[in-house]
Amino acid sequence: MRRYILRRFAQAVLVIVGVSLVVFFVIRLSGDPTFLLLAADATEADRARFAREQGFDRPIYLQYAVFVERALHGDLGRSLRYRQPALPLVLERLPATMELALAALIVSLLVAIPAGVISAVRRDTAYDNLTMLGALFGQSMPVFWLGIMLILIFSVRLELLPTSGRGGLDHLILPALTLGLYSTARVTRLVRAGMLDVIGQDYIRTAHAKGLPERWVIVKHALRNTLIPVITIIGLELGTLLGGAVITETIFAWPGIGRLAVTAIFQRDYPLVQATVLVTALVFVLSNLLVDLLYGWLDPRIRYT
Amino acid sequence: MADALADDARPAPRTRRRRVITALVRKRAGLIGLVIVLLNVVVALSAPVLAPHDPLDQDVARRLLPPVWLAGGGHEYLLGTDQLGRDILSRIIYGSRISLLIGLLSVVLSLPIGVCLGLVAGYFTGHFDDITMRIADVQLAFPFILLAITIAGVLGPSPRNVILILAVGGWVVYARLARGQALSLREKEFIEAARSLGSGSIRILFRHMLPNVVSPIIVVGTFGVAQMILLESSLSFLGLGVQPPTPSWGGMLNDGRAYITVAWWLTTFPGAAIMLTVLGINFVGDWLRDLLDPRLQSV
Image: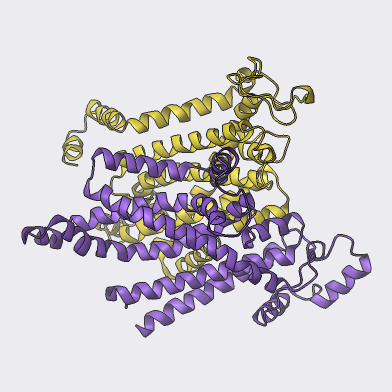
């Protein structure tokens, strides 16, 4: 077990290093980083001073070393627009995004697990075909269009729910549905596939042969074993949700890090963009690490592979 | 399954053709998907002939006209006009060009690269494999859209940059798939036999391994086109993809968002176009999967 944990941990660190490299180099893609990292009205002297301070005249690997050292001390540069350190700005917005992503995840699991199980059990019936068709629709729907259509129906026409902003539960419903639909569709398909796999196993046939009630076999024997791989998917799904949050938050004016990133890009506030990307990747890698460890604990067979 | 095996046993061209047709009819969705895709291609190719108006022609005197079946709508502008008085139908027709072009090109660029990297990594394993797979891990650790908007923001938005960004994002799926296949194939006897007959690595990779990954790759590549069309429209929706006044479906939705309370048709129709196109391609992908590679579930 310890070896498995250490290996996964080392992998996570490696990925974070890779992410930091990408973030570091993307800013340098356009040539002179002072144009991206300083306000547009900065003078030539400002630029020269900033370049010297940041060490842009030094070899690139030294620059990266300085970048990493600062990042490890929690210094991800200063936001140009807010004129304050970028990291606290991002962390401030993180709870809103997590709230939205978790709500969407819960919605999608609550719908997808029963829908997928029933689909598998009643394979090739009208119910199964309709569910799979629905899932394909869900995966084909552009997130932003779904959001706008929901606003059009529930906020503009029916005047039932607020169009934007963060507040009580009523503010959360539309964004969570919008963000959750794609994951719902995908998880439904995966649960169905996993369930079909399990249903074909010998121990399920044995359970049936013992004369156990159908419902008991499905829930106690089949579902349990289907859910273990589903846990890994949850970790990956969180990445999809964090990405989808960029668009969902923009539509619903949800004050999370996705919206922060989009406005920062339009305001050419690159230190803030950098911080947002790094924090999001960190959240994603850590939650996947957590999920993997949970997986190793739930399914002992995985430990030494 | 038994039927498929029986069909394989007598590989007469007629039965093979019949199998394709049965699969298509049984999965009626596949047929619908194929029709949608073909229709899309025809519309995109003959946009100048089909579009009733110039998609860029503005006139504020006729701005925000509703579609033909609503009071105030006219036969001149079947799906209404936008905030600058441009014909929505014509813009949707022209927008299909952008969607298809970017969707196809980004897959055409990323698929061969991904497959080659994956095959080589899986066949040779070792350091090359480690490095490639770690790069893939890093890429999967970003929610892709976040990386895409960052690069689009730094490089500046243009169709060329969008295609490049999507291609950079797309290779991982193909690489992992090809690597998995290569890993399992390299132990197979026919590869062993080829090696002992003196085949070089390149010959083994491209003559013996590549044909075995073609069908899953076609399936995944089809879904990839749908995915890329969705991503392109997302980028354009955020204002970081295809720039106005060029008509793109995502861009039209972005424009129409401000008028949602007064003119629902500005956002409803282009969005429906995106969904229908993506759905059609996904239908085709599903059908291809059942036809080519029934083992490949849930991609």
